[in-house]
Length: 254
Image 1 (cartoon, helix red, strand yellow):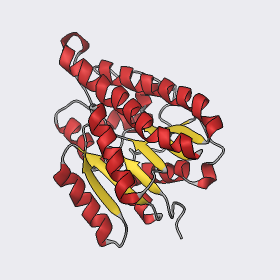
Image 2 (cartoon, rainbow, N blue to C red):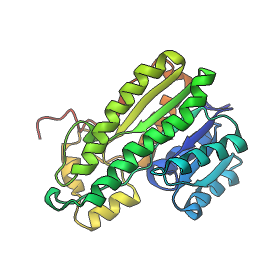
Image 3 (spheres, rainbow, N blue to C red):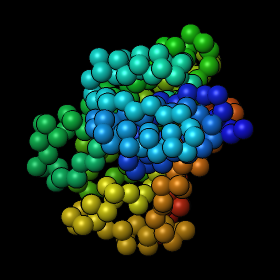
Image 4 (cartoon, rainbow, N blue to C red):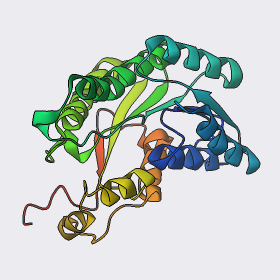
């Protein structure tokens, strides 16, 4: 029996990177997982791999910026798998552009994906959690919830907003049985990370030099904390952002 046996998890942005890793990790721990992506084909590939391992997975196409699409996706999961016990708001998009060149569309898309999308999912899933008096929500923050990187104005603004969204919901919903927390990963080696390096928009060596553990994170380094926050082991943790960065944020020397 896994730590998440008998539970249903809804994971946005679950077709690649951290979201894919969390979906796979939750499934290993016994949860039935529903994962969303704007590409149904990519989401289905992940779901099929999970099902091939003898676990339960459902792939759904959903643009989290669209409230109606979120409501429909949540309804489909509830119909197919039952009430959602765990929500992971992982969908996001990086936006690396000089601030003076940031367009209205880039600004709005970034904020809408991270802030509107997280709010819509929290409301759509949270209502049934509040009715039952039980549930767990994990929002995906970032180091940029606390500090700034150049050319990440929209992204940092969105992640800073998520930090306060997490705390406010935790304050309102904790006493009604719904825990709301967040993860703030450091730089994680994903397909997206490799693309940014190739394009010269990210210098991994600088990140490694500042990281006391001396390396960047792998996806599995984030999966473990995500499992922990969703499990009964974290039943008294609420309104907390768990930073998973190898010590990068605490290093004021470099």
